Amino acid sequence: MKNLLIAGTTVTAALFFSACGGSNDTPPVVTPDTQSVVLASAQRDVKYLISEDNDLSLYEFDKDTTAGVSNCSSDDAADGVTDGQSCIDRWPIYETAVSDDFGIATPHDVQSTYKGHPLYYWFNDVAKGDILGDKVANVWHLIYPNSDFDPTSVGTNLSDDVRTQTYLTSHDARALYTFDNDEVNVSNCYDQCAVTWPIFDEDVDTTNLPVGMDATAFGKISRSDGKTQTTYKGQPLYYFVNDTNTGDTNGDWVKGVWHLIELGSVAKTTELVADVAAGQTLFNNCASCHGTNGDVSALGESILLSSGIDTAEQAETLINYMKNDGTGKNATMVNIAKGLSDQQIKDVSAYIATLN
Image (cartoon, rainbow, N blue to C red; front, top):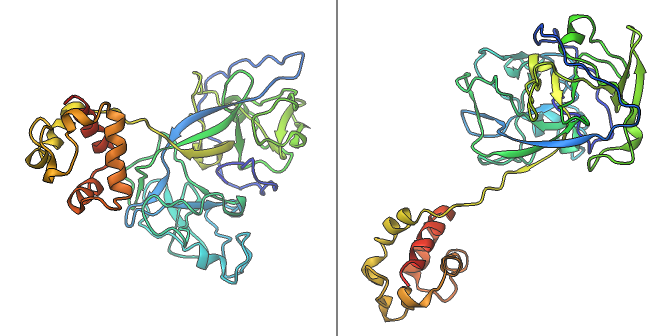
């Protein structure tokens, strides 16, 4: 239950993991406003957990509510999906050596866990980068380990892909967290735990919420220490004392039981920047047909690159056309174009533009 998914409609049962983690620092003072506060969202770039053996994505299951115990069984509907296959057929268990944060789950004796959470594959993921199991039935999620993840852990790694995750913050731009040891509308964080994880106790402006949040799902509970605490879908909300700067998410995955509230995640888009020098090196492979300065008509058919393409954008469009269509084009050029990455196309196009 790494994230309380906003798209979901059900609050999962509390996970009964031990310890609340954190430090002994004095928590920051939270001064309640006299009016309702406006919650916000923030974004961070993250990588997800994959298997080192086959590079396939790994998942956790919200219904695994006890540390080290899998609730994905031969029952068809155990995972929230009904299609004639069993849960364990759709979600094969992940096996690896036990090391550091990784343990063994029951009743599947060879299933590995990450910080107490049993790990699974999704049967429709067949290649590196596939994440088709993320948010299935709103109870299956990718795992975004925080900065304490050890990349040398046996059998696991982080994805090459980077995703931009959106998460919930308070009105003062500080990340908010949930605690797996809490029960619905009951906080189990007191004494030193409450020092490390100060409670969030504010009246929320439910008319002005981040996209996707349920305005009717906010509430307040009375704690046994006489304080009140804000909840979302029955889960008490907290700060983390070691989040000292805007954008800090140091509390995520602490002890495996503290988690950000995810509002969504998308593939990170990165604008490619052309490297003209790299493009010139690539163009050396083209010079035998197009001329060193792009002043030869290849096969007596092509335009002169030194005069026929005005901008890098036009060159990139032409090469992409060759790469992605190729209809009626010279087979040699099509094969060359198909062998170029997007970055290489950007680079060589930028160089071609300098030949004018």
